[in-house]
Amino acid sequence: MNGGSPRTGAEPRAPEPSLHGDERIAPPPEPTRVFSGIQPSGFVHVGNWLGAVRNWVELSTRLDCLFCIVDYHAVTVPYAAAEMPSRTFEAALTLLACGLDSERGILFVQSHVPEHMELAWVLTTLAPMGELERMTQFKEKSEAYGVQAGLFMYPVLQAADILLYKADGVPIGEDQLQHLELTREVARRFNRAWGETFPEPRPILTDAPRILALDGKGKMSKSQPEQAIGLLDPPDVIRAKLRGAFTDPARKRRFDPGNPDICNIFFLHHFFSGPEDIARVDRDCRTAVLGCFEDKMNLAEHVIDTLAPIRERADELRSDPARVHAVLAGGAERASAIARATMDEVRRRMGLRA
Ligand code: AMP
Ligand code: TRP
Image (cartoon, rainbow, N blue to C red; front, side):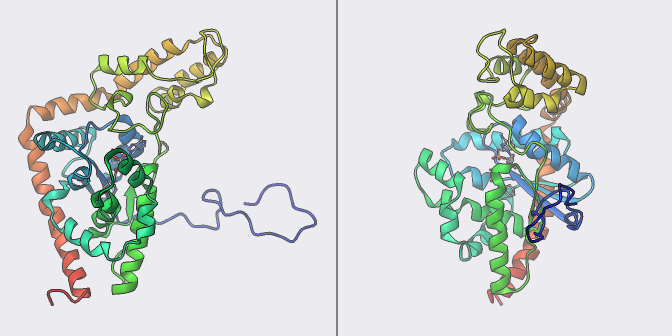
């Protein structure tokens, strides 16, 4: 600690606060309950997987976990009612194919547990308007779809999702940190107003908290499927999407040397390719031995191989849809038991239905 060159002359200063490497700060304790959610608004993509879902699978092997398909969040933007059931089913199927299962953790659909709505209303009375107005996602989505109160209250419903289960760990991508900060604020305000009830949940990030879209413009997201690799995309679709992907923008011609440090494709190699391949790409890109096109096609094969087991499990599950529905029904039942207990406590503390 503080192992840099000694300071001279000045007053001894406290070491810079650091998240890592300061052994006086004990690592945060393991969470006792984990909660996270995903919207059923398109396919589950590589950004979801690397930023969150991969972690869900790992955490579910050793901690008490709930994972929720948040359909009431998805209705805050226009959608076709006829498509919602299949979107919800596909999200569940993909998560199961990634390795979640009913033995390890609870997988369920938000609208199957109405207490989410009930707690969300209670929390609106504590949520600071100013902070809701500052939410990046609110600003972006209201620009795209028009301002409405559902988009505005979106983070309050998210807080309700988490607090309903008194979760203290929330595995999410970086884009959700702002929403989680609001959840923490709302939990503190509830505890101050009505007595200690909720833990302040902490985010759990992966080593890929923000995967960029294939065109390098903003994050990979469900709203731009052509710029995202779906976990269940067939091999030819993955090849076609990567063929058009952006690399180092300064590398204009084939024999210009590239800079892997700023290349989205090289970043993706870290999660799909082996160490030798990564070292070779790093070297051969900088010396222009390797062209971008060849490298993208090389990455495509690694992505296809890595995702193959997920696709195979998804195909198996697709032939047995009753199994997916049974997992969701069982999940809703188990989640409901926890949700009802929390709402009983919330009502009791607030003097409701006494
Ligand atoms: P959503 O697709 O918005 O329902 O997101 C589900 C989860 O995936 C959340 O925890 C997000 O933070 C995470 N996530 C979504 N897109 C990305 C991305 N491009 N990179 C990393 N994590 C992401
Ligand atoms: N807003 C999250 C997203 O778009 C989804 C979500 C809803 C969520 N409720 C949650 C994530 C609770 C974590 C915890 O990705």
